[in-house]
Length: 124
Image (spheres, helix red, strand yellow):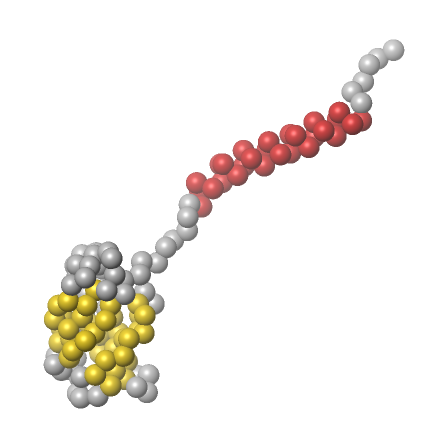
């Protein structure tokens, strides 16, 4: 007579193999996907405007990288894009500097909006 593995032992072995396979796949797949792409967040605030330049402050704890090419867009109260701060790259954390605008602004109320920045109203 041949001896066979009992049904209970077979089921337990199959479950253990499935769990081990899942763990192996998990540790193999997680590094492939990483932590995802994080959008850098640089909170800035515009406190003054002279028509051709704005006084912009980096309120964050990190320096804005020197290679950040994105312009910070400036909108009027009626949500029309009117100008942009051309270059915020290299702005150190906790500092403020005058930066040029893409086109002059007249007197009025404006706000900045960027996917990486909070909405921030200011007057010019």
